[in-house]
Image (cartoon, rainbow, N blue to C red; front, side, top):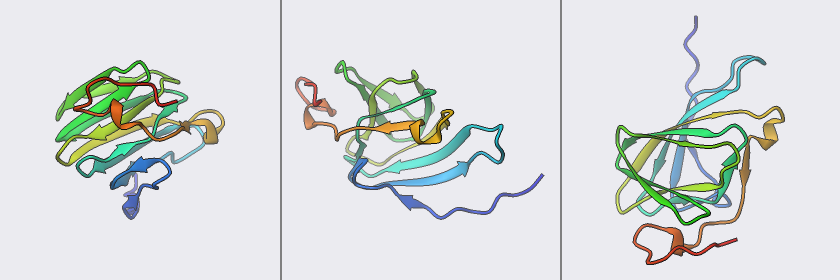
Length: 139
């Protein structure tokens, strides 16, 4: 057993996130046989990810605030603290905070080719966000 060294908080890059989003790694693979990464992700009000997908899917457990998760079909799911959302492998989606801070724990497994674990796309159009009248495809 060992206590892992603390890793500094990372502010996520504007190419992949709109607004202020911070990442704290909880665990990363400690050997070649391990694939899971677990991180605490904090979103400022109105912040969101760009469209993206994960080769092996993703678990998202909301720990505070209200999260919104959307897909390319225009579905927007509201998830509250204590609830967990699962995205299927390859499912393009985004994560967003509403008008208050939101935090979730993200669990993702690396693909066989680590660079393909998460595929980032373009930013999400405002029409997909909470409070929008009708989502439109932003591809």
